[in-house]
Image 1 (cartoon, rainbow, N blue to C red):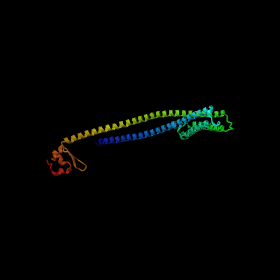
Image 2 (image 1 turned 30 degrees about the vertical axis):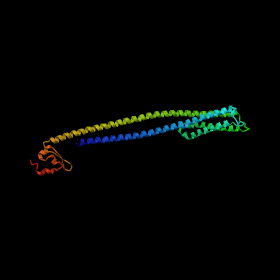
Image 3 (image 1 turned 120 degrees about the horizontal axis):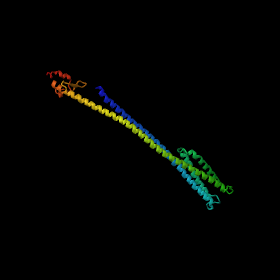
Length: 287
């Protein structure tokens, strides 16, 4: 009997254990998923910032520099664009604008070079362009003096070299941005694959735990049904016994009697329930 009573208790303990495992698994997987999504979002934002704020804005400034260089070329071939006794104010103005764009590129590099692994490869070209621009400015300033000995061919060579450097700078940023775009696509692909793996593991683990849990619940139901069947059998034996039988609680108060007991003692069930068995010594059941 004790073994039969212990079985449902064991099943209940097992069910509680599986429920705890299921809850713990859900919590751990949720924390892992949130952490992964946070890391993925941070990596995505870093790549997008590098592609847009660092490389794209640098590309746009390089395009603006190219347009200003075109204006300088036009000024050099059009005598009407050179005024003030040959000082070439149009070229100087364009050079000033180019310097503003190049300074903007320098500031972008200082602010966002940590976001791109290509910054170290691009920096030497930027320094080269800055050096060349300084030489162009010095040549333009010198050419504005009355006794200047700056030949137009020398200035044209400086401008051509600077144009090549800015074009190289633009191309490096374009290549870097394209590679970052590829990295972003790979990041999304890895993310989808990793999420699929995580959800697959979670589904498999959850299925195993739920299956074990349902198995334990089924065993508990079977044990409960068996216990109820045994109780019904015991109740049938109790009611149909030819001998008088009573059941008391821990305080020795009668909590149940069978039909034979009432017939033998003369006490009805309502009279005897809650009484102490000592009342049977009253002589009322003398037959």
